[in-house]
Image (spheres, rainbow, N blue to C red):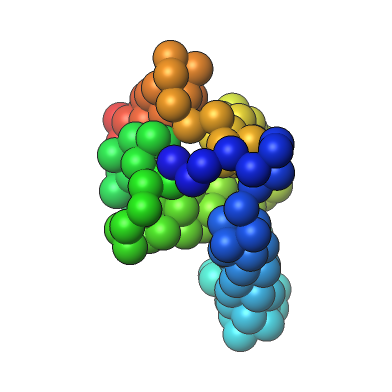
Length: 141
């Protein structure tokens, strides 16, 4: 975990977080532009598209072993960080399309708040990780 700097997050992680959020937004926007249209099944609406977004979120999440690994000082931790951001964006999209995914979205919001505040260790972080993992496992049933 990066050293504390008087309560402020290191600039590199903030920049990375902003880049992940912007990239997710741009990706969703480009996808919408390419496949938008009421005649197209990939138009971004409907329960099947919400289910696909939720499944995509969980596929990315399943490759994040623990929140405590996100701020390690190695290259793979940046991949974990990006996966969490992308998964959270997809969970939010799923919830906007189908409210059955609201709980998954809220669980991801908790995880992203933990990343923003660097509270990725301890029992609360483990519980947040386990909650998303459990919700994702239920999607497979």
